[in-house]
Length: 265
Figure 1 (cartoon, rainbow, N blue to C red):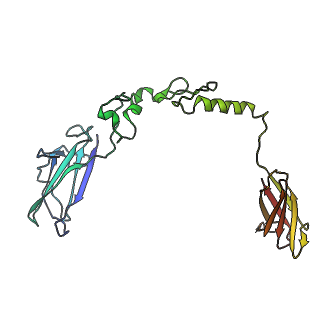
Figure 2: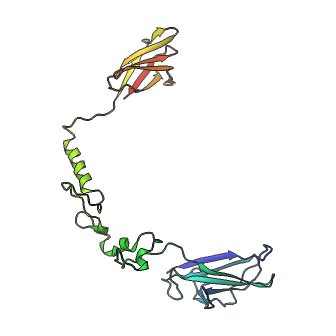
């Protein structure tokens, strides 16, 4: 069981709290008094005409309504309510009608198997999961693949190239993965690599600057080049990097510092 908390601050037309205002709660659209609770856990149902249902000196009112699992006085999630209170300051009766107290997310019916039924309960979209997904949950939730097919998900068959979508992955994808896994040791792969070159005083001077030709053999005309000083590990930003071809790069710096050069393909 559960009780839904409803609270509100009631004000007069000047925005001041309505002190000790009498409040009534009805089912929406009429004068049928609703069953309410004055506590979140304890106590039995109370009719909306209870003299205890009044705002405090700050205009605050609070009560609880039982859901459909409440032992007594509970309502379905679709039930709407009407709240009426007396604004004695302005000598008027205030009303809020067609009020939803329960959360707009409705519970599933695990015993509703319809997949395409015309009944509204099967077409509702205001649920965390649909009745169809939740159907018979408690009888198949513990099933595991491949001994069963929980929730309509069939086990994948590696040698089946079918395109059924009721699986964690398709047979076709599973087949391709299996082929790749069993042939990867004999199939060549095109992968990126990295080669590190350490230099000391081998930077070549030219016109007040320094350069280094690096043969990296990565087969990439646009590699990533990272240069770091050996003395402190700080990065050196080259002012020019010239790709000579797919396997050679020329790096230009402003100072002749011993450095590590890392070329990433």
